[in-house]
Length: 62
Length: 409
Ligand SMILES: Cc1cc2nc3c(=O)[nH]c(=O)nc-3n(C[C@H](O)[C@H](O)[C@H](O)COP(=O)(O)OP(=O)(O)OC[C@H]3O[C@@H](n4cnc5c(N)ncnc54)[C@H](O)[C@@H]3O)c2cc1C
Ligand code: SF4
Image 1 (cartoon, chains in turn red, purple):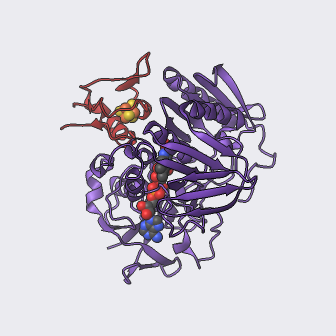
Image 2 (cartoon, rainbow over the protein chains, first blue to last red):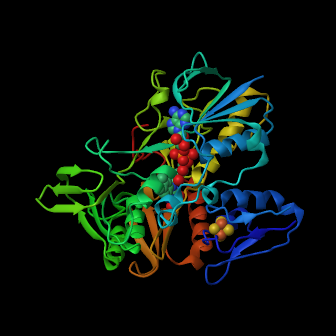
Image 3 (spheres, rainbow over the protein chains, first blue to last red):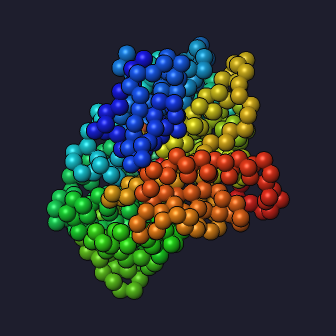
């Protein structure tokens, strides 16, 4: 499955990192890095991240 | 068909509705929303959304498809409720019966009685934000009453827009109650470097407020004048619709650890209005007015309702969500984990309060929370540190028989 983060909207709140640590991470500068293509096993976690993002930056396009 | 009524259609109401269907509820859900808008996120209302005409479409929450199975009644509020008869009286004059009830009514912005009807602003809703945003142009003189998070954020946003900003508050430093004196003072210095003027530690002797002019006289005679007044003096839980049911309504709705209101089956509360004990901290029921909590409480409250109304087997582990919040002022991200509210002492663990820092909050010798000023790289590590400290306390509590702080359960 695909994961999109609108990096113009993302404010690096990191809530997604707590919801789906296998997909989202903060790099050394505190900026979000994530995997754009993830295993379907992570779907529940990614959905939780979509809900947890305070600025609605994350989408699952399919 | 069995019916659950959700009173309040914001973050908590939305997530509990999704949670009910996701957990297998196959009855009706009716959501009553006093506001006319589909649920939207509030944190930007004192930050980015004040800088340009706010756009509801970008503030609206992403919803799970399940939310669409509910009947959403916008612009309709609950006026009163009979918990024994299981009925609600609505603002459109109709009655609605229910089998399960969710209180998700959040809090309302407090207003000084002198300001009601005078053109003074508050910021709680999208409509509030839009009304204030229209007034914030270069050179506007803004008077902010209150120096909590919301007042401080509005001050920061307005001064960056070119407004002249005066903040008036009873506390000695901004955000004194949640963050403590030292951290509050450090954040105040940042505001002052940006040009915000503070008038703190003094009450208001008198004031006049109109749509275009406001004048505040403080106890010591200081006069503060401005064009626009915004009140950010705290909030009051929206519980008047539950009056007459013999509930304790002094500070929100008192819940058990499964979020049942005073232990009543089939009646739960979520979000800002819910006052519940969190075993991660102690057994004192507290309200938590932070964005993360409506989601955590919604999940648990949905499970509780399902177990009360159907034969569903639910999670019986104690409900122990990690409190957390963030605030943005200028380029500073303030982020916390754990419960700063119960701490009796704060200590800088890393860095410098005037630059970037990690601050530990302690109750006795126990770490109960931590605050980051900036330091985004440390966020994941600090959160882990707090989770570990709280988990350890929970396993071997030192202060079990000490009187709990904050009292009044
Ligand atoms: C300006 C602002 C900035 C914020 N910034 C942050 C931040 O940076 N970080 C953070 O962690 N948190 C922040 N918060 C707090 C966060 O937004 C709240 O914790 C969250 O909105 C609580 O959600 P809720 O659903 O419990 O209540 P609310 O969002 O208050 O929703 C309650 C809803 O119920 C409706 N209602 C009330 N009474 C009735 C009735 N009788 N019948 C029907 N409907 C009713 C109300 O109109 C409202 O729509 C901020 C809040 C504000 C206002
Ligand atoms: S939760 Fe949202 S804002 Fe925060 S880092 Fe993730 S995508 Fe960005």
